[in-house]
Each structure stands twice: as C-alpha cells, then as structure tokens.
Length: 509
Image (cartoon, rainbow, N blue to C red; front, side, top):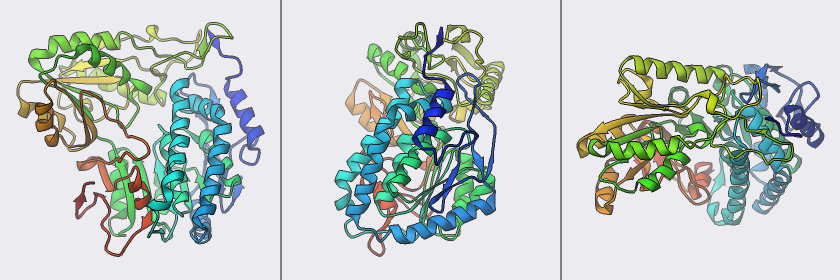
C-alpha cells in the first residue's frame, strides 16, 4: 500500500500556490478582507486527520482584526447591493466556472483537510457548483420585488461541508445582492475555502474570509452593528450561544443545529433494501447533519433487522482515502475515512466504553485492522463502525448525535413508544419510517418531530428547489433551500413573515 503519486499534501499546496499566489504564501495562508489579501493573524499548527501530516493552519485574527474585516465587508456591501442583477449573475457565473476548472484540486484539499474520501470530496464540490448554476437560472423571479439586506451576511459554519453548504450559501447570498463574510471552520477546510474565495474575488465578488476562535470572533461576527444576517451551521450548544447573542437585536438569522435523526422500523419486511440503505448511511462516517445514528426497531422484528444490519456494516470499507496498491490504481472507493480529529475519535471511544460499562450491548464492533492504511501511518483519527443496543439514558449516545460511525438501537413494543423514542432530542432535521403500509406511515409521520420524514427511504438536506429546515431545537430562524434561501437574505414587502422557526412563531412552508 502506498500514497497515490501526485496526491501528497505538499503537491496539493504547491498547486494552490501556483493557482492563487495572492492567497497562498510558501509559509502560510492569508485572510481576505477589505478587498485585499492580508498577511495578518497568527497561523495555528494543524495536522491532517488522514495520517497526521502537518498542513496549513488558520491565520487566527483577534477581535479587533475581525472588527476591521467586518467594517471592510460593510463598505463592500454598500456598493455591491446597488449592482444590477445581470452584472452580479455574470460575476457569480464566472466564479463558478473558475472553481469548476479547479474541481479536483478543491476535492483533494477536502481529502487532506477534513478526511473526505475522494468520491465524497468531488461530490461536495459538484453539489456546490451545480446548485449555484441552478440559482443562476432561477434568480430573476426569486428577487423580484425584493432588495438586499441592510448589511453583509455573516457565515459561521461547521467543517464538514465547506463547498456544498458554506461556499454554496456564500455564492447565492452574493447573487442576491449581499456582501459576504465567512469564518473559516476551526476544525478544517481552510485551504479549500481560501482557494475558492480567491477564485471568486478575482471575478469581483465581495467575499471576506477570516479565521479565528469562535469565542473571540463571535461577538463581532454575530453582534457587529453592520451585520445584516447571521447564518450558522453547527452544534446545539454553540447555536444556543449564537441565538442568545441575537435575542435582543431583532436581526435576521438562520441557525441550523444538530438533532438526533432517527430511523424507525415498524411492521416492515423489505430487508434487502434496508441493508443497502444502512450501508449508504455510513457515508463520510456519519459526520453529516442528516446522518441517521439511531434506529428505533419493533421488538418482534429485531432478529430480522439485526441480520440486515450486520450484513450492511460487515461490508463497509474505510481507511486512508489516498492509499493505493499500485501507482496507476484509481483512488479507493471507501465509505469513509477518518473522523475530523484524533481527539474526536478518542471522545467517541470514551463514550462507547462508558455506555457499554453502564449496560449498553455492543452488537457490532469492527477493528482498525479491517481498514485500509499505509504501513506505519498514524491512525489515531480513525474509528471503526460500532453499534450499541439499548444505550443507557445517562449516556450522551442516548440523546445526542455522535457525529461518527456509531449507531444506537432502541427496541419498542408500541406505536406510542416508537414515536417517543424517535422524538428523543426534541426536534430533528430528518427522519425515516420503514413501514410496509403506506397508510401506517402516513399516520405516524406527522407525529415525528423532524422537518423531513421519509417513507422507506432516507431524507437529505436536498439541492436546488428542495426546502430545508428543522423542528424543535434543531433549527432557529429562517428556513432555506430553493426560494427560501433567497428570501432569508433579502428584504420583502413590509410585514412579511419568513418561513421558519422563530422565538415568537413557527411558519412551515
């Protein structure tokens, strides 16, 4: 086993320096604000989760530096918001074309920075670009009768989808008439986002990209007087802090937070289909906001469910995303690579160990030896697929999303128990019911507190015209997707009530 020639981190960074020398120096990556690349901030040491290789670290600004960046974005916003739509669309289209020309480099950066397998990394880039192309064809009617926000959009997003969630949102926000600020996710995605931003600002887009700690920068990026909207994607604890900071401002906001997405199995017999779906659910090691880490299963079906489940997890392939047998071999088809960090893998291992010690039953625990690795490589960020039956209520695995390849299974005897177990986290983004009878699924689905409920199929965040939001504690503020994304970052008629989950009302589409 060896590293695929031409895919080393040094190769990727050298290509970045050649593609965007204004943003990548030999010794560090730069921030972008005020219309210029700035050699400021303190670069922090970072190591790739793939094998511990040292990679470019974020140039962390302090609060004063972030305030200067926000002021620069506000200046850009005052000019950009008056640019005709046709000109904005032409510039966004040119930026998309430039990113498409560097598609494989952007994907390779995602592999090294956040551990995505090659197929998944390229899909992340493609979803971003294809989604923005769709908005370019639809934007005229979406902004009719609407105006840009009074200030720039501030984006604070998690690390797992730098292109298809964060960069996609940034491009649409600019298309709608807003200057855009983004904080580089603390745990990864710096170089990918920097390269994409460099390509965008060359085409004249008003992008600000800065790095720094959330505690240090949040007061400026959330409460800064010039901010027109805050868009957040992340965990519930951090999201609650952002919501508290916004409480007295009356500011536009989109806060996507985690929820325990559950898959219920009730009066069901399609086990071959479920086996395929369970395997697919491990994409990117379940490090997704729409992953399904909890299965709620009718007790009398458990023996059949278990056979289907073990067939799925027994076929999973994980390991180093760039390891090949021979130099000319294609990159491996993996279900997932590492977790985002060694500390996350240790945290998850500790949670599993504690849950088992308190009564959880391990029904599947793969070993690292079953993964595909380079000889002697650092594997501290990898976690093999694991499943626990009946996790104890005192365990974080009972009520929170593990954000890793760990499933928990809860057995129930009645429909009331099924619904209670599926609603364990007071709201979720997605859920699924595997149920033979359409009538039964249609009766149960409205009682599941998830924004999207699938019948015999998983639900996802969606692309293009598909809407996305969350119920309960999984979402605060405006919903997005399709026309709702544009409405969330534009001003409509006086008295307009946006679709979303707000402190004083919830309006569903």
